[in-house]
Length: 207
Image (tube, rainbow, N blue to C red; front, side, top):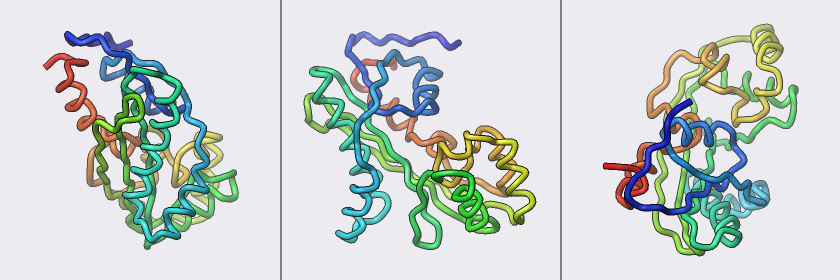
């Protein structure tokens, strides 16, 4: 278990996400925080943003800010971190697969192609946005067929349904890829280094 790093400032930090992966990233980076899942209808916001002609990056940031705003209402005075991730391939937006059939279809649609993972994060306090960042990584999935996709899903189990694209690169998902260009933390769903820079500037982690 990693030790916590304490800066000179004592501020309440809240992660507005139920994601175990994001929580692990913050914890491993030495941050002390609370985790409160944000009640947000992501599908409805995505439909609205797409109808307005927004791109995936703007949509990821809008989702991140909405999550932070919802939790900020319940955590007065706290610095609330909202985050979201979008997957884009051939102009299409991908979501977390609803089950095995959807996960298999997504994997086969992405096989042999490049796609982008866009991760956005923002920080609010009492409803005021203080900071935001949006970064992306490009991933090239190797070619494979139905037989491999079935074996992968057998081995991955329900973990395949917990992230966009049906994979987790930090685990068995590494077997799916030929090349990854970009920040590993962004692939996992958070522009962590940029967030740490912001928190360091506020004295929450030591410089």
